[in-house]
Image (cartoon, rainbow, N blue to C red):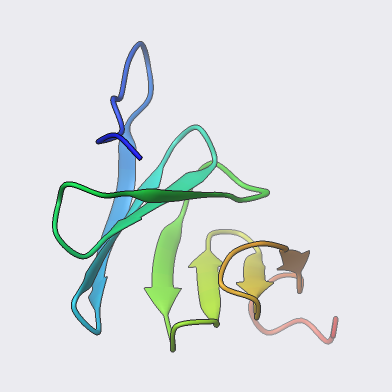
Length: 88
């Protein structure tokens, strides 16, 4: 894959380094992942803002007014609700 190009009003929301990979979360609901800056993998999220946290190679969180969780490497996402809520 090519290096992602951010055009128009797309902004970087957050960056995370984990296990030799750079994760770039952008305002167009994408996570761009690279280990070398040349080859990139892109995952689609269900939110366009917040902070990303990588727990392991399959478990990602995006934190904003809700907590979004992926346990399959960013392929699917679940809105678990607001921090401190009882939604599971």
